Image (cartoon, rainbow, N blue to C red):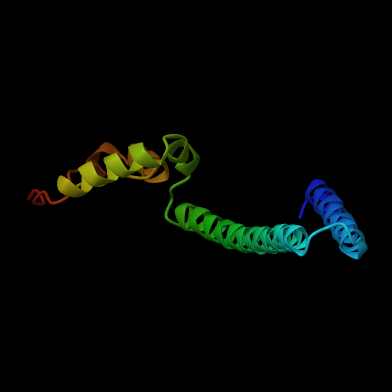
Amino acid sequence: MSDDFKKVTEAFERAVISLRKDVEYLANQSNVSDKFIGRKNKILFHLINYQKYIENYIDELHKENKHLKTHITSLKAICVIHGIDDYPMYLLRGKTLLLMIANELQEEEKFRLPCMMKQKLKELPLQEKKPIGSKPTTS
C-alpha cells in the first residue's frame, strides 16, 4: 500500500481510538443516557467495520492487479512469439474498437497478418509470391 494510504489509515485509527475514549468518558458521566452511548458505540462499530472492509478490498485489488500484470506480460510475450510486434498500436485503439474489428474479421472469416509476417512477405522474391490456395503453375 502507498505511504499516503498508510498515513490516512493511521490517522483514521487514531481518530476512532480518540472517539472511543471520549465515549468511555461520557459513559462514566452520570448525565449521559445509555441510548446516547449506544448510538455512539454503534457508529464506532460501523466505522471500524468499514475500515476493515476497505483494507481487505484494497488488498484484493492489489492481488488482482498483480495477477493481471502477470497475464499482460504473458500476452505480450505470446504476441512477440507469433510475430505481432505492433500490439502496442492495437492497444491504443481501445477495447470497444478492438472487439468491433475482431467481430468483423470473424464474421468475414478473415484475419490480419502480423507486421513481421507482412515484412517477410515483402522481402520474398516475386516468383515466390502467389496467393494462398492458388493452384501451382505447370511449366
